[in-house]
Image 1 (cartoon, rainbow, N blue to C red):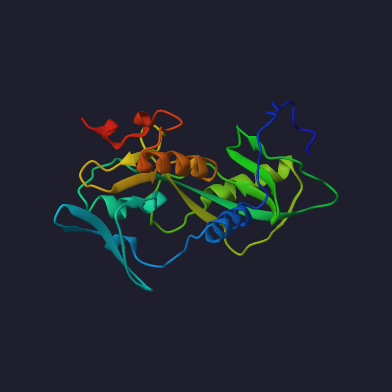
Image 2: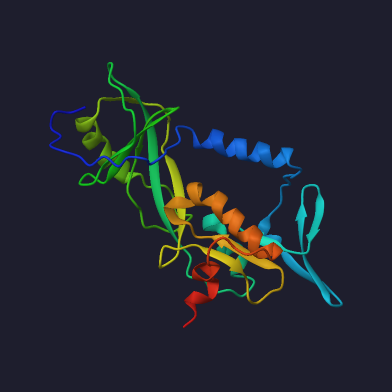
Length: 239
């Protein structure tokens, strides 16, 4: 590490993952072993069907039409592609960010993530190498990549830690779904029977995903929820 560092705050007890993709795949494999299945389709084609007093949802997939009594919109920054055509005015926005992986020069090591608050970037030891993550970019969700922050952060990071060459031809671009109060929407869609929402977790979707699934499952099955779900209700944005 650089000798220019004057001091730091060490937060203990904050777990991190050196390979989020592998962990997510493990969740997917567990889902399959428990009897779940994955099908490919365009979620924007979700439609409500009614027959007498019964109602349900349908979606065309590569394996044919799928029907279900209930449907969950959990598409992160793309959730508005589904809920807006259904008549919901939810103030979902997007914060974009970039990262790049690097080799390590020399025999330096990095044992845990660190953040340079003044520089506006983070470094984390990952299976792929040392990850340099930028701050927030405010741009349209589907705007072309503009990794100017990465170009500004990289020289600052090299002053702090001996980064080697880049390991990817282009930086990764992520889109974080956010609500004005930085709290996700979890719960029932009031305009439709059998429609549920679970999105808007901002920068915390990776860690909040499992507990969101538990809360939503309890709400959908009528079990007592382990925490008060009203703070996540979509109607909190009504004027």
